[in-house]
Image 1 (cartoon, rainbow, N blue to C red):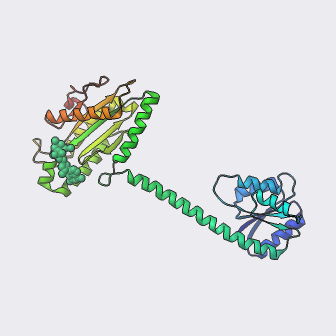
Image 2: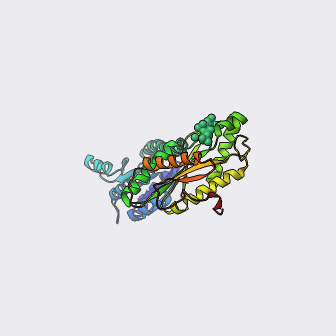
Image 3: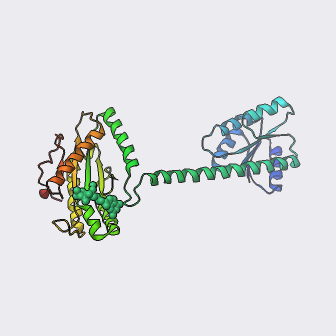
Length: 326
Ligand code: GH3
Ligand code: MG
Ligand code: MG
C-alpha cells in the first residue's frame, strides 16, 4: 500500500517511516496537517498514519476534512495518540479515523493495523470499480433501450421523453417547434415484391438518408413500422419544411427500385405541423395535425410534403416541393 506518515516531530516521523517501509509498504511523509491535506489530494495514499497534535491542521481536523470529500475514493485513517483514554479514542474514531495507535509506535501493532487497512482498502477499491462498471452499463442500457435496433434512430420511449421535454419548454418559455411525420410510400408492396429482408435494408437506407438531411439539434425517431418522426426545435422551425423536402428528394435519389411506385423507386410522403409561438396546444394535437397532413400527402399522390392547415408561420401546404433548391 501507499502510506502517508504525518508527524511534526522528526524522530517520531523517522520511526514511523522506517516501520512502514520494513513492512514492505511504499511511504511518503510530511510534517504538519496542512501539508498532509495537500499530500492526500496530490499523492492519493491508501493509508494516512497521522499524529494527533500538530501545528496547523490537527490530526482530528485532518480526519474530518478527508472524510468530508465527495470524490468517492476511500483513504484509511490511523491516528497516533499519546493518550491512552477511551474518550480520546472515541473522539478520534467519531472524527472519521478507522483506527488509532498509542505512541510510542510499536511495529507489531502497526503491522496488525495495516492488515485490516489492506483488507478495507481492497474492498473499497473493488466497490468503486464495480460502481463505475455499473454506471457505464446503466448508461449503455439507457441508450440501447431508447434506440431502434434496425435503424439506430430513437424509438417510441425516446420520443415520449422528447415530447415531455418539449411540453415543458413550451409551458415554461413559450418555445415553438415543428414536427414532421414521414412515411414510406407503398411499402407493403415493396415487401411483397422484394421480400422482407430487402424491406429492412430499404428501411435502414431511408433512415440514414433522413439522418443525413437533418441538422444538429433536430431529432429523428422511428415512429412505427415504416413511419419516422422528426422534431425540429425552436431555431430549426423555419428550416423544418426545407429539411423535410431535402429528405424527400434524398430518398428518391437513393434510387432503390420499387416497381409498384409510378416513379419506379422508393419514395416518402411527409406531413408537417408547427406549434406557433405563444400557442399552448398539447404535443399530441400538433402530432395529430402532422398525421392529417401526411394523410393528405398520400391522398394527393404520395412522394410529397404537406403542411398542417392550422400552421400559420410557414405555409408549405401550397409549396411546390419540386421548386425547393437543394
Ligand atoms: P402507404 O403509401 O399508404 O403508406 O402504403 P404502405 O403500403 O406503405 O402502408 P401500409 O401501412 O399498408 O404498410 C406498411 C408496411 O410496412 C407493412 C409492413 O410489412 C411494412 N413494415 C413495417 N415495419 C417493417 C419492418 O420492420 N421491416 C419490413 N421489411 N417491413 C416493415
Ligand atoms: Mg407507408
Ligand atoms: Mg404507414
